[in-house]
Amino acid sequence: TITFAGSPMPVNFSHKGHANMFGCRECHPSPFQMKRGSSVMTMEDLYKGEYCGKCHNGTMAFSSKDCAKCHDMSRMKKDFKYASGDMAPAVFSHTLHTSMFDCDYCHTSIFKYKKGGSGMTMDAIYQNKYCGKCHDGQTAFGSTECQRCHK
Image (cartoon, rainbow, N blue to C red; front, side, top):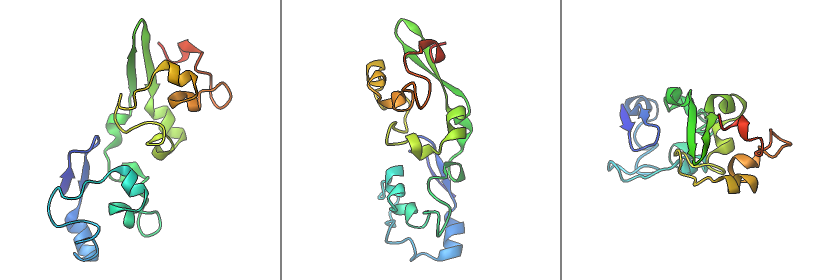
């Protein structure tokens, strides 16, 4: 088993399992080089059908968008708190949102895969960016309902 620990959410990959099913030439030298660390992949790459996404496209193998198949999602089953100056922290329920949407609905078109990595501000949310993309008062409660998030 190979662990990709550089990922914001580490991935355990069974090299032996894949090699037993497909042999070496299916993956080497393309899409993966034979040298550790030489393939720098992102989830966006996988979604485009590159690297693991070559087979994990939902047809040949489970989709790379099925995050829990490769990632341990247990640390996502909690509320995230975002400090916000003079107000109480904004509380975001990742569990609630993932029960309604697939991960790629928000990641990475709206949010990066790193807490705080998107540079979100309330001004941007009021301009229908980030959370404001859905929390516009029509799709979901409006971003001006401060107490809904700032608890």
